[in-house]
Length: 346
Image (tube, rainbow, N blue to C red):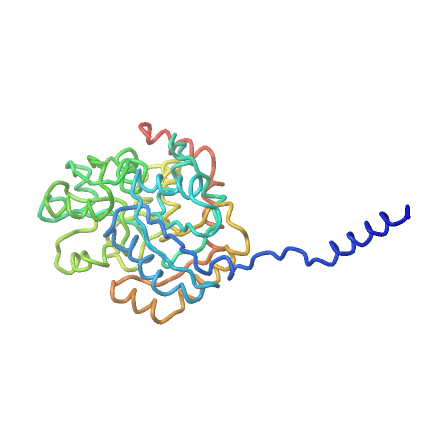
């Protein structure tokens, strides 16, 4: 009789061992019935910045396991810093928050902005639908300025979303290094709001928006109708689509050290229209979204949606995009320090 407890114990152990182990949830099971929110870090109507995710949301669902719903939400604030901080610090790290923020935001931590509480090099980068170059332009009816040299002689009022975003960083850098006379007015909710301000005569132009954005949406006819003049290109190299006589900002530097500082500030331009998920998203879900993104880039429906908006399609994959971002954060410290000093009010 004293052996019965031991036998009973063995029976219980056998029953426990016979129970199947808890199975990990698949990507398809997780996403089924879920909603992925695509956060655009600017106001609505921001040309290509919001045009790309809007077009992507209509197509990519069929390529994601479980076919979740995709919703585009705009979260303007501090030139994308608000949205980037939200995705890293607040949003769930489960693959249901996806950031689509103008590339300039990734410089904020490098320049040590107090409110830039995120680490771009640790994000799970998904891809970019197109390569592009930034530029500066003027609204012809508001100013006689037609070249960057003119802007060195006469004040040009430019609208900006934030001093920490491209539209604030680039004109300030050109003022310091090239001697331009841009007066920056910040606080616009997005590039669409800056465009309205130009048309109303509140500002003379903008410096730091993309060539792709200019040629899409409601501004697609501006060049053809000679409403604006492009006066400078801002990137690591010139665009073949912009007239050759429009100078590259890097070439306006008066010394190799100045040029290197501009390279720090222009480097994010190589990412085009980047998108990412938070650093804590499970690897299998990141891989699934990246694969779905690649498939969507090849989808005829997506290409047609872009064609209707005059948006280009020249994708950058996750691996290349990740390498570009990490390269930005590995740039020479001396140049980065000078870039910070160049923008002392940041």
